[in-house]
Length: 538
Image (cartoon, rainbow, N blue to C red):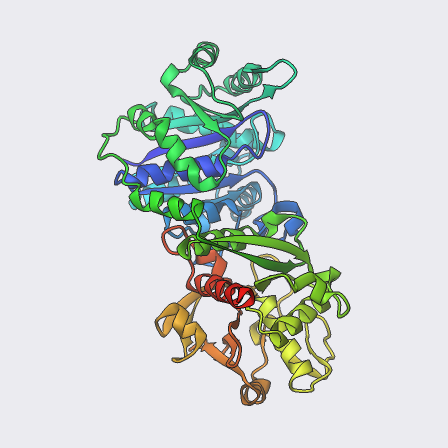
């Protein structure tokens, strides 16, 4: 029988429910349990696909083409296992499903209400992964904080779920804050007490409290929290600030969070968690033998979460190369021909990030021209790859008006063009080319050196593609299509032959990079940046 763990948050948002959920899942996985994590988001959007990155950070894409919350990226990076559409549910999707049923007449004329119809639909989605038979434990993270109006149906659904399943089959972990008041010189437990009180008012007694704190929590404070929040002392878990999110699983193991959870769920302690490979990764991460500075040229750099998977992929690739990667965020619209050397001259590599729209695109093209002509390692992702195609067309092939039809529909040289299947699409949500698609890589290329194999799959999120009418012209001039989709003949990877490292991918390689399997293109890119730094030093 599948066991269920619900993770709620109180006092404030951004306490790290996603990281705690991923860390607990990692420890349970390391004990031999089959674990997955799902995220329930309280906003009314159907998915994050149409949200501005400034609003919600990056939109993470799963293998099956679901546009999801960025926390699913953490789940995959920690567990090294793919997620799916079933792992991220929003209020919008819940209401859409219920309204569709009402329109079909499924409710036989009954009045449709939040309780029981909305809460029943929430519970149905909570059980989907558990009923698949693929998992021993399902961890469900609830977005937002207790007391938010939009979270109430989810909290009520958890109350009902816990009552239906029984106390040993469904437990609640409540993540809360223990603030340190510098003026008083002490930690304060009252916010946690009030947060638990709010949860109790909705009929839920948390089983475990995870307390986020800047300072270590004494045994006396643990006893006080336990007394006033109706939990066992050993169920008060300290979650102290960590220098890296990847240290959190080991901190939670030290606090016996996994043991406490197994005890509450009446599950056997199969084995002690096998975290040796994780410790090895952390050792390389914290003790680098080299350092490089790589520029991330993008449109949304004011909010680093907009490129969360890219920055995490650099951490994975850096550890693999025993190299500290310092990412410098550079707004693409701040770059022009006059200052490009000043902006990029001190870097050992440049990644041009994905994005949409015209803002900052000329800055990206100017940055690519600089790295191409100065032999600086370059990596372009999605729009970054397309900008590399445009720059090469303008400055090498002499196609001065080369452009993408996303920016100029009447371009004389549309080297990047809208995909045929997208030309009649009018709806925005979930209509791009999404999810995993195959790619065949040509031997003898940089891409082949990175992957070490010919047939791969990568995840996509785009509407525009390389215009194959120009392919011969590009290849004759030195830009090679090293990766091709075998079904549609779409150009997936481009690279320059006579350059230390100049690679662009139409896909999003950052979405498949995990702690256990750093993405090969990021690994090679960081290695190329290290070589470039060494040459400059010599």
